[in-house]
Amino acid sequence: MPSPTALFSASEIRDIERAAQTTLPAGTLMQRAGEAAAELALELIQSAGDTANVLILAGPGNNGGDALEAAYRLAQGSLEVTIVLCADPARQPLNARQALLRAQSSAACFVDTDLRDDLFAEKWDLVIDGLFGIGLTRAIDSTVRPLVQAVNVLACPVLSLDVPSGLDADTGNIVGENGIAIRASHTITFIGNKPGLHTAHGKDYAGAVRVASLDIDEACFIPFHAELNDVRLFSSHLRLRMHNSHKGSYGDVTVIGGARGMGGAAILAARAAAKSGAGRVYAAFIDDAPTHDSLQPELMCRNAVDHDFASGTFVAGPGLGISSTARNILERALNAQVPLVLDADALNLIAADTKLQTLAARHASPLILTPHPLEAARLLGVSSATIQDDRLAAARQLARLFNATIVLKGSGTVIATPGDNAVINTTGNPALATAGTGDVLAGMCGALLAQGWPEREAAVGAAWLHGHAADVLVEQGIGPTGLTASELIPAIRASLNQLINKNAQHGRTL
Ligand SMILES: NC(=O)C1=CN([C@@H]2O[C@H](COP(=O)(O)OP(=O)(O)OC[C@H]3O[C@@H](n4cnc5c(N)ncnc54)[C@H](O)[C@@H]3O)[C@@H](O)[C@H]2O)[C@@H](O)CC1
Ligand SMILES: [K+]
Image 1 (spheres, rainbow, N blue to C red):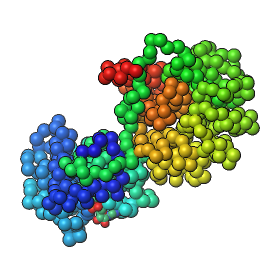
Image 2 (image 1 turned 180 degrees about the vertical axis):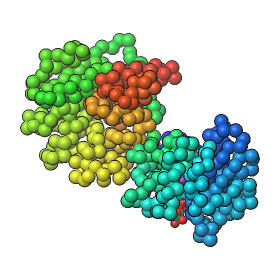
Image 3 (image 1 turned 120 degrees about the horizontal axis):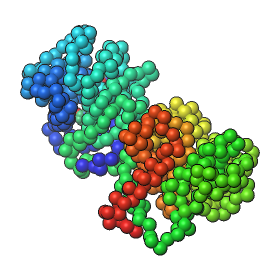
């Protein structure tokens, strides 16, 4: 079995399936998929008792076959199983046809799709969605659309098989123009996990995701090129501090930004850097610098033009603006051989200036770019819709272009580094959709780089901790509505210390 965090594209899943099928009797994988789905279904209807009402939607392909296998198993007991078959049996793939015959031989009841109104007047305890899986190639059409619409307003749990029907397993987008997809509360996905369940619309449509590897022989799995974020990816850098250390041991971070009217962005990034463990933090302002930050007097506030760019770690962008002063200061930072995080207007300035693009691409020290989709779009000269169409591909393209680690923000933040697996972040929630949270993330990346974390681990660790802090706050009722970026910062500090302490218990103290 591959790592549970490994992500596979639909075409990779098909390769694995082909390899597995050569050694297995026909229909084995479908039967195992149906069995795994039925097992999860029983867990989901536990509270409804032995006579729960289960509605199963089966489509024309093998996804429908999985649903029919699940139906066959669920109908063995006292459950009321109702099947809506959206397929012409004469055109079903062979294994799905076999599954249909088995379901027909069971106690499950088949109803006509035309009975839709009656169907949804019933009280269902669970709906199983086996309409389409990774084989959907065009928008769900008008024959099935009303069924999807009806399911999407039901209050009961909805279990999607492999992928919510209508969702692209690779990208997390809805398939086709004006397409529609099932909004599941749970998804059981087969063989391996899939990126589209975790980024773009994935989290909203897939709900809680479980992977059923279908007992496929390990040798059939091919190397994966993307994975879910996990503490394991950065835990070797979660080290206890040496007693004999000092502020110089944890690095200097300078935030460059805070043009007139946007001073708060630089302050947020600088505070986040300080509370993520940087030894010393400077806030270098493009226009007039305040004498100090009265809530965080440890920050050293000064004018950027007077700052020394020769050493330390730099975070350029929060509230930077796009003035010529900002551009020239950014050029100085890009020319300095220092670890650098680029965010917000630093990215906008680079997108509009080929000289800055070349300097960024040639930057020899660690470089992290933290664009949101619109900034990524400007950097690549495309629309933000194009970025969102395939977030993994966009992040990888930017990583190659700038030879840097990219943190493409949004639902399911994607972190891409040249020559390494792309990572989709698993933590975070819509509380983060508010001003200033990006500044906080950039400051964290700077602080981790300053403490000696390599750029990929710094980016992956910062994304995880940032999201986790927001998750903890939401659990405490501080958000999602109205959570502010400032509130995230102490929660990030708490999460980081907890992780370090937990990791130290596992023996990694130095
Ligand atoms: N790939 C695998 O390893 C395994 C696949 N299994 C299941 O098989 C699925 C893939 O099966 P398929 O390749 O048959 O594909 P799907 O079952 O996802 O759907 C393809 C079928 O839908 C039709 N179709 C495509 N777009 C349509 C549209 N917009 N409107 C109406 N019909 C449309 C196609 O003509 C085809 O008949 C997986 O998602 C998974 O659920 C499982 O049986 C276990 C093993
Ligand atoms: K499905």
